[in-house]
Length: 425
Image (cartoon, rainbow, N blue to C red; front, side):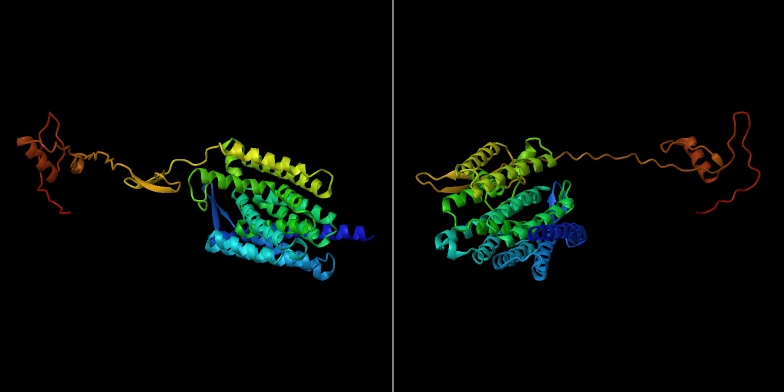
């Protein structure tokens, strides 16, 4: 009876989370456009407040279920939810005020330090877990640059990590991740291509922190080597995306903090896939890696299965590195180009400014002057002579323009029987 009650309570909670997120995400689209909290994707503005809907619904539904006693979270899941909410608020500040990434990384690391159980992991493994949570949480943000990718990978990963928590009889984190998966599914109704709203830093950081923190709690008590393999398998897609971006920018000589179309989704689009095809490919890759991670966690497969996942991710990264994504820089005339050069006898890289020749690219100014033709309208239909006419004809035409008379034919003479009055104006 208790099992049936738990399944019914989880179903009701997930349904409520799905519906509330779908409605709230639709309502937040207009305020995001009005406040200009948007992102440019293929020259179209996409609002970034979809993550607010995911954070609010997940926190409220999980808190309400815990207070009502329907789905109790427990102290560990409660701390994880509180820390993830703080990280989501920090991401919202980044969406509105464009905070730098180092502040987001530092804030995420502090929040992770409040969640990791040092008593069971030890100080060294705990410090490594804090760094892993902070880095992978930032990697989840990189998945939000394409329509539907972050939500799909988040749903798949949430089910996988929730299964690992359920195996360990951790009901609180398992229910919390179920609520998160339902909220992301409701958000995907508006994030499928073409996206009408996006997660932004708020939703992506919240999702990444909740998933990685729950994975660390589920793997507590296992060996460090096997635990690292399972954690990397559960989050293989965001980790591969982050490694790909860092390697490509380093090899191209670009600053690591400078954005660009160099993520997994961007490179797959360059290969000819559609936006929906990119979501299917990355979602399928995440599903395969998560299944391997769950099987390795339960002991159904050996630890070498995680090595296969790592090898496949490395092969994909090396293959996508060959896709060209950085085009030639557009410079103003006469501006300098910063080109990396090697100093003689040193391994340090210096920057030399290469000046482009200032070539006068002036177009010839062609002045087209229209002939000024003076057209004088004659009264009573009297024809007029051209402006350049001289002599008697010119004088006659001038007098005809001032004193209009009926035009005479060749067989009759012009007779004026009455004096003519001239009207001025």
